[in-house]
Image (tube, rainbow, N blue to C red; front, side, top):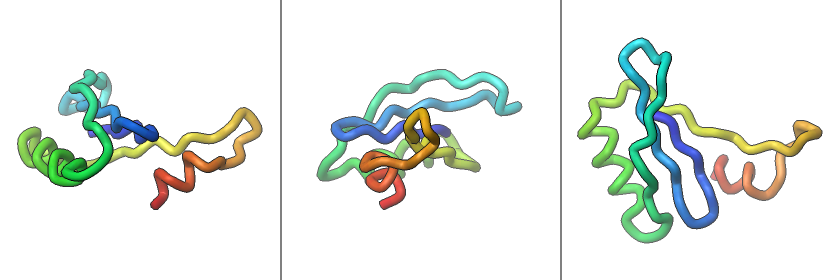
Length: 71
């Protein structure tokens, strides 16, 4: 499962068993209950690994959104 963490939503995608093709599942609205919803999706899809995108600028430096993702 891959997560794309944004300020208001977390994009969620799931890959096939080979890890070759990712298919979007939708988005989870950030706020109360977002962790519970992500846990539910992990359990529902029997996720073995999570990949979380770390946004960087064109220079490769991390900005405020990267700090939010790390937190």
